[in-house]
Image (cartoon, rainbow, N blue to C red; front, side, top):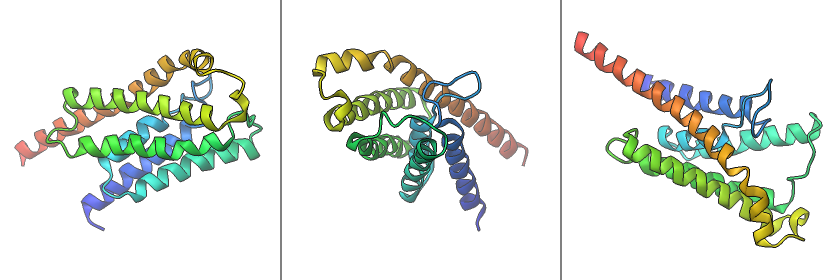
Length: 186
C-alpha cells in the first residue's frame, strides 16, 4: 500500500470514527459530543478520492441510527419514509465537498466557508423537507407551522457543523505548515 493510499485510508477511517463517536446525539449532552455527520461527509467529499467513501459514511451513519433504535432505547419518532431522504441529502453534502476539492485551493477560506455554509444549509432544508413530505408524524402541520418548529434547530445544526469544519481547517493548516517546513529542511 502506497503512503498516499495509506494516508487516505487513515483519513477516511478517522472521518468514519467521527460519525460513530458523535452520531448518537444531535446537539450533544454533558456526556456526548454533538453530531458531526454533516461535517464528516463534507470533508469526506473533499479528501477522499472514491465514491465508495460516501457509501461507507452513509452505512456508518445508518448503522448507528439502527443500533440506537434497536439496542439503545432511542425513540423512533424520526423514523418514517422521510428518513431515506438522508441519502440524497448526504450525497449532496459529499458532492459539495467533492466540488470544492477540485478547486486550486479548496481550503482557502473564500472557497471553504461559503461552500460549507451552503452545503450545511441545504442539508438542513433537504432533510427537513423529506421528513415533512414523507413522515406521518407531521402530516397535520402546514409548511409554515412545520418550518417554524424546525427553524429553532438551524442555528445549532449550522454551528456544530461549523465547529467541526473549523477544527478540520485548523488541523489542515497546521499539517500544511509542518509539511512546508519539513520540505525546506530536506
